[in-house]
Image 1: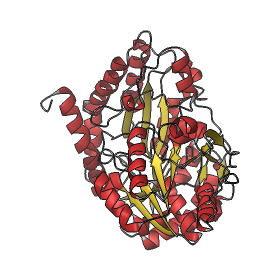
Image 2: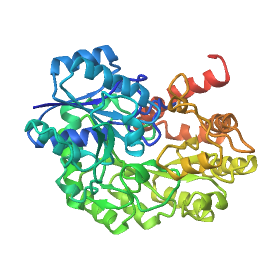
Image 3: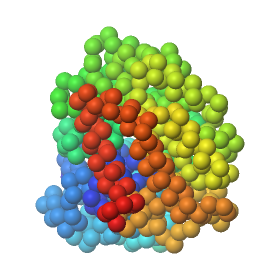
Image 4: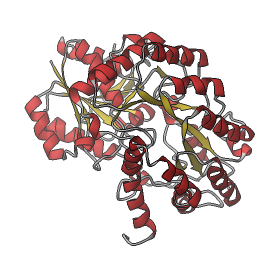
Length: 485
């Protein structure tokens, strides 16, 4: 039985898998990792798999339809995102018209947050899968293979039955993560790593998970609230080592690994064991990971010794009351120490700053930009608060009348970039977006930062990643402020 897993066409290089889906100003494009994990599970289950990432290959909808017709699958699994959902529904409807006997399953963060609303958009959608969907897809595919089209027993599915919206019981989050196939094996077989890029990372890279779920309560973060949940589940250190070794031995074109766990360093003892294994087995593969600003220098040092060169941290704001308002759980007074320790450990830092959280003012935004310049991370992102369905941030914005959308299309500009969809009493969405653009310009074109970057240039590795990220960023800045309007 054939299964097509599809990241459907939209804008070229539309990064649907990332936490805030959009076309990025730096050219970043995430792997379709959730689809890839499901592809690996289905392939191990004996299904004939096709994995098509249309935005990465810049494949049109017409070409996608031709490919699907040639494959003639019995099940098509379509990834979705909030800003692309109407486009995704359109692609699903055209596929259903072309292959009327094919079962159409929608997956992803949007349908997990709004399964009923999604099903109401089209009668041609057979079902949606809520949350992590590898095992839901496998069980559904087995039923279809047995000509058993009864959906009642498949946990995690939502669908229309006899005209009524039906939500099957939720499926428990996957706990035995070691049993999942290495997602890197799926990448090697079906995708080209050179099509993907993470602006702060070495290039080419692969993205993997060593754990799922996040116990922290940040009110804006979409994955723990609408997709993975807050139950923290981990792969064993030995299993993580084995995937690193697989990548090193089988994907020589890859320069590094991006660990996409929401927070890799939740269990510092586990981090230490993983790092010791990487050192012992002389993996010598560069990697980076998401951390929190309370990470200690001892953990930083062993991460560095094992191949970590970059840590990614959400600072969000320099104001303690804003951090408290968004349940960040970080002491603003300790952030400078975090950056000092990272430098002592020899780690680069990619730092994320956010505009528009509860309590935000022009004064707090100025303080945040000043702090970013003082901390001088290797790379930064200045980002308006993106309030997505399924999050506390969305509920807060909607309840207070701050949410300004007519449809989910409003989350993107006409070019596919992020668009702020909230107006605060003292700061409009336009104000927040302009602060992000101006802060990006002010940070990257400051003499201190330029001098810092020039000192890195003798390194070929830094030159490649800097140029690859900064060319699209500079084009965006020029269009925004100067000659390319």
